[in-house]
Length: 126
Image 1: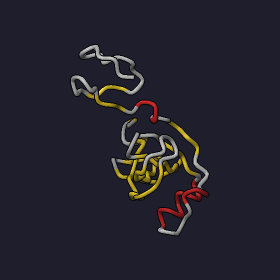
Image 2: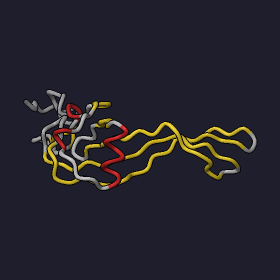
Image 3: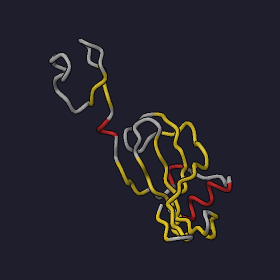
């Protein structure tokens, strides 16, 4: 948040809805997505005056990957209009599919899948 005297600008996020039972486009697992609206807000004495720069993003619950939708698609989903998930024009913003964790078979600790050996006990993972 940035304030100069009585004026301020703040970036905000608002979770619109959860969309269940979809296949993640990053990791391929069955998951749900959170539709989040991000925008900038101009404030006067901490009272919102107007918003601009709206973006709609989908956040995958399984791996945390983030996808950006067009403004029109986001508004349609927010209004509750029917949509076909495969027809959405999604731009990947952050791909977290390769950052998912696995469990070490030896010590049971959660570690990143990119490791070949467990950093806790040294057991070979792959």
